[in-house]
Image (cartoon, rainbow, N blue to C red; front, side):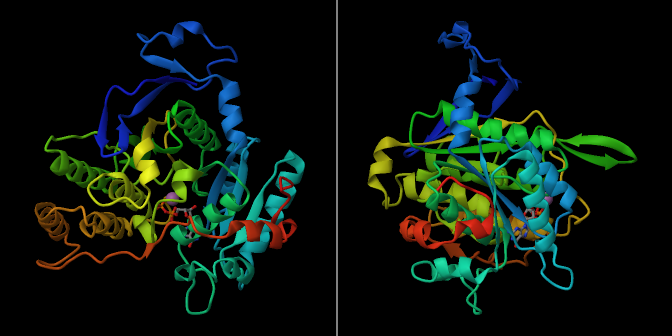
Length: 397
Ligand code: GDP
Ligand code: CO
C-alpha cells in the first residue's frame, strides 16, 4: 500500500484524530523503497509483509440478516486468507431456514478455498448463555441476544476477544464488490501499521457511493446522514476547542476497525447509533473533560485514522432509504445525550431535527440503549467451555 500521510490532525484530550489519507497505490510491491522513509516524502509505503502480519491477528466481523447468498459469498472472497471471518447472522429460521443455507454455503465455500471461518446465529441460546453472568443488558426478555446489528457486533467482538485476536474490523454482508471488501481490510491493516499506540481506530471514508440518477450513473460523495453526522461531530469538537474544524469525515462509518485493546474499552449503542457512539465514547473516556475510567490509556493516547477508499461503495439498495431519518435521529441523539454536548449544540440539533421534520418543536431525540465496555467479560472461561467446532472450522485455539 502507498498511502498519503495525513496532512493535519486534531487533538481532543488524549485522542489524536488524523485527517483523511488518500491511497496512491493499493499494492506497493514486496520491497520497501527507502525513498519513502524520508521525512520529506508525503507518501508512506507499507510493505505487504507488514500488512499480512496484522491480518493474521485480525478478525473480520460480518453481520448478516437475510442477505442474498451470492453477496455473502462475494464478501467472503474479498477477505484476505490470513484474517478470521466471524459471521454473525440474525437471518430467519422459518419458514425457510436461511441460516441453514448460509451455514451450508460457508461450509462448502470455505472448505474449497481452505479458508477458516466461524458462524454464529445471534439468537443461539448457547451464545446468549455466555453473556448471562456479566453482560445481561444484551439479553432480551426471552433470554436471547437482542435483535439488531449493533448487538451482533458486540457479541462477535467478544468472541474475537475470546480467540485472542488483536484487531477487529467490521464489513457489511450486502456489499456487491469483493474488491472493495479487500480494500477495506487492507486499509484497516494500513491504519494499524502506522499506529504509534496500542489504542487505535481506523475508519473508512468511501470515495463515492454510486447511484442511478436520471438513468445515468452518478457517483455521489457524501450521503445525507454522513453529512449531517459529520457536521455535528465537528461542531462538538469545535465548541470544546474554541477553534472551528472540519476534520472528521467518518462519523457514521459502518466500515471501521479497532485494536482489541480499544474495542474492549468503548461503550456501544444500539441500532444506527453504534458507529457515531464509538466516536462519542472516545471523546467521553479519553477527551480529558470527564474523568477517564482508563487513566493508563489517557497517558499513552489514542489514535484515529481516516482512510479514503478507492473503490466505490455499492451495497444493496433494494432495502430502500426509508430509514434515513431514523439514522439521522439515532446519530444525532448520541451527540445530544452525551454529557459533553453543550447547551448551544443541543439547541442546534433540536432545530435540525425539527427542520428535517423528524421531531416537533421542543421534542428531544430518543436516547439509544447504551452498552458498557466489554472489558470485564470472563472470556477465558468461554475459550475452554465453548465447543467451537460446532461453529465452523477454525483450528486456531
Ligand atoms: P445500511 O447499509 O446501513 O443501510 O444497513 P443494512 O440494512 O445494509 O445493514 C448493515 C449490515 O448489517 C448488513 O450486512 C445486514 O445484513 C446486517 N444486519 C442488519 N440487521 C442485523 C441484525 O439484527 N443482526 C445482524 N447480525 N446483522 C444485521
Ligand atoms: Co447496507
